[in-house]
Length: 304
Image 1 (cartoon, rainbow, N blue to C red):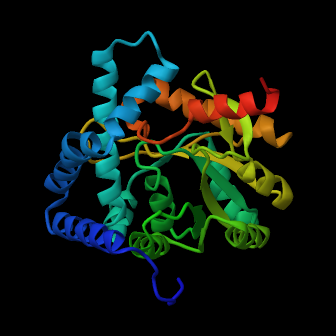
Image 2: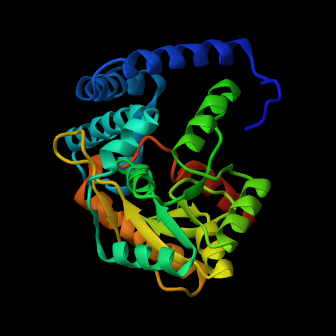
């Protein structure tokens, strides 16, 4: 991480201090009450206050217009609860790693990962903001794997500084999204490394791939890097269990190499299946589709 002075506004600084205080206080609690506190705080307090619940409800109406409003509200609140639990889990790096050390690696892809390590073949893990997306990575790190990744920087520069440091603590190398970060990740993979990319965020320059039945611009980076480095592309998922505390580590069969769009469409379909099974575990709070922006751009291309 850079030691350069952080440039942000006074409001950024105050917001970051409030978040730091919340995280620090929550980490003093035992695990179960800690997760319950953060899940409840985000779902009942933060999400309604900052518009996340409204956005989640709009996203649900966008993809499932026939879903009753009561069901949309239930899923939106469950999503925010999971987001709060996931955030505080991922700030307890050592705790998450130790908790995942004895969780079995399941799925057809688990044996492929072990084989790739033995052969020195790179692996590109792909996943979405679902369950605890860091749980399978923690399970691998606890078993001696070194798994890097690429993360999207936070808008608040003060928060981003400690968020980035926290990302590095589990395993590295971890790169900030951008040209330099992608180049660093590519070199890591070229040397036989393993890394994770979350592909379910809006990418205005990405290929349009249907996600939950609606067009969603999707980055092709994971597939392109896998093709250029000869890496296996393996979807993995950390599914939160009914107790709200434990998570699985599930590794699916590798996505066959081919056209990058087809590869990312296959990865998208794997994520869609998980969301269908556990709709409250996906981060509906994200701006995944931005339908208004897409309609505006389409109008600009076609003209009056």
